[in-house]
Structures are given as structure tokens and as C-alpha cells.
Image (cartoon, rainbow over the protein chains, first blue to last red):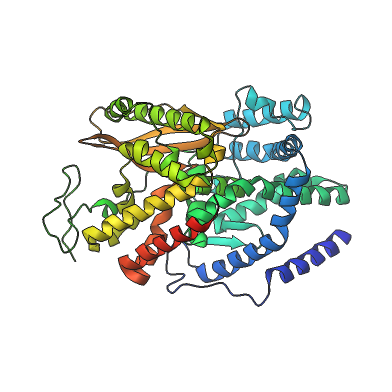
Length: 270
Length: 217
């Protein structure tokens, strides 16, 4: 119950930080894309998450990075990710990849013992790198499409399928969820959150530079990334012939740049 | 965990330009690399670019003029920036004049280089490993798969699409953790074009580049 009260207070603080009256800028035509029918809601939630992040999570993560020495942060990061091995193993089984599931189990065993509770990723050094599986991917392997893109409150980019998957992973296979010591669990959940946020600090600046429209860039990246994971790094190529049917001479200068010989002929000008 | 992977991959996907293609040690070397098999080309370039970043502190600090020189001199021979831009712009390309196409290509390239400037320092901690490559001799469009292995942490999938041209193999797309660069820009570019036409997209790119120019790198 106390945990719940704490959760409520935290939620209220975050709502304030997010700025209740704040408005995201919604471009015309939002929601017309088939991959993102919820775009209007999504953009508001993305904007909200961004504000909360700037007000709370990012500063905390920066402080965490400034205070703790790198080896210790690496150790903590490895330890939390070691706790994710059961999720990997179960989902590898569900995806009919027993060999990979065995690797996950032995990684968990060796890293939890000789690797000092997961602090050191010995198994990776021994040539058995970490797999990355979750129930959202399993659903994908079973044939479920991603469904509409869906930005979760505080947790960020997701899809309808992956939201279902996350819920499953969280309720069934997140080891922290099974801890009896509620207070310790809450502390660990908090540290894990900060650890995750801190681990993306270095890459964030690059993202900010690269994107013309950060929302769109993150969305399209998320969808591509997840598709790649469902296919274990080897997805069939998406081909839209129209995209490259176009070595046509530029408008207003007909004939000065004929189609390259290795390109299909240019379509008729509109 | 997946959020972490997402941010990493988006950031790296954005790096493209200078990440892949490396400065070959000699002009002769680069000429040979461009004519060799696509996987050899990628390997040579990746190793060369990392080597030159490691030994050049001003590149590591993100010096834009040094980076630009590097790209002009050593990267350009291996990359078909125009095709990359054309694919990212998609349908709008058809309606663009020659001058607009040139501007788009130039500004997109500038954006990629400026983006890369923010991350080049961390690139020196990676090693590039080739993954199995198979292609029929007659193929003119191939996928070369590699992974970037950091000194600590999980390897990062890093794949290239190359097209065979009269001047040898040219890279026209790169993928980090499954996120293809061209694909990731396409929706944004299409939206910009439908809002403000080709000139609107050019202006957005120019504005973005100006904003980045002011930023300390």
C-alpha cells in the first residue's frame, strides 16, 4: 500500500513536471499514415515524456553519471541486464530456438556466479554474447504485425503489439517483480530506471542533431529496429519500386541527364 | 533495454557519412578499393576511417572542417550521396530541378557530416568485424554485413547496401541495428515536401544545418 501511495505521489510530481497545459505541435495531416493512426495522441505523449525527461530523468541520470565511477556504472548496468536473461530464455523457447535459450540459461548461470551477480559479463568474453528477446518479438515471430505505433506514458516508443509484450514480460518474467522485500524492490526499480536513462546519454546528442522532426525520427527508427529484432537481424528487404524508379532528368532540363543504364526506365512525368 | 538500443541505433544510423567510408592511406589505395569486391571495399574503408580517427585528435573533437576534408577526400569516392538523397526524398525527387537536386544532396550530406561530428570521438573505441558475405558474381546490388564491436558491451549490427556502377561499387545506404538511414529520413522528407514543396525541404535542411553550425561540436 505504501508503495502504491509512493507511486501516486511520483505520478503527480511527473504530471506537474510534464506541464499539464503544454501543447505539442501537431503537423497537418497527422494520423494519416497507416503505421501511425494515433499520431495526434502520440505526439502529445511524446512531448509530455520529453518534458518529464528534461525535468526529472535526464538531470538525475546526469548526476548519476557524474557521481559514480564508470566501472561501477558498468557493473550495475551488467547486473540489471543479467536479470533480463530469464526473459531472453523464455522467449527463445517460445520462438522455438532452444539452442539460444540454452545459451541464455548458461549465461545467467555463469554470470550470476563467477560473474559476481552479473556485474561482469564473463560469458560474452567467452564468446557467448547476450541475446535480445522479449515477448513483443515472440508475438512478431508468431505472425502478429506491430499494429499502430503507440507512445507509452513515461516509457516511450512502443506499438500495440509491443505494449502487450511488455506487459507480459513485466508480469511474468521480470525478476524484480518477484521480490518479497518491497522496499528493496522499489529502490532497485528506481536504480534500474536511472541506469537505463544514463546509458543512452552519450547517444542522445547525436539523435538531437540528426533529426529534422525528432518524433518522426524516433518513431520510424523504433519500427525498423523492432522489425529487425523480430527477424533476428536479418529481415526481408522492403522494396518500394517507386522510390528508385527515378533517375529521370530533372524538371525543366529534359534530356540532359538520361537514365543510368542500371536503373529501370523513368516513369512518365506527372 | 530496447529503448537503449533504439537511441543507440538512431544515433549511429545518423552517423552514416563518415562512419563507414574511411580515408584510405593513399590515393592509389582508394582507387583500388573502389574497384574491388564490395565486402573488401567496406572492410578497407571501415578500418581506414577508424585508424585515421584514432590518430587525429582534432577529428575526435569534432572539428567540422577536418571532417569535411576527410569526407571530400576519402569518403566521397565510395558513397553515392546523390542516390542516397534521391531514395530519401522519394517521389518528390521527380519534380525537382537539377539545381534543387544538387542543393538537396549537398545539404543532406552536410547534415550527416554535422551529425557525425557529435559522435566521432566515441567511434575510436570500436573495432569493425566483417560478417559472412555471399553474392552471386552477376549481382549489381548487394548487402555487406559487419558489426562494430566496442571495447566493452554488445556488438552493434552495421550493414551497408552497395550498388555496382561504372566507377566501381558505391555505398548508398547504411543500417545500424536494423535501422536503415534512407528509410528513417524518408517520412520526414516526404512530409516536408508535401508541406512546402522541394524548396520547403531544402529550407528545412539549410536551417537545421545553420542551427548545428552554431552549436559547439
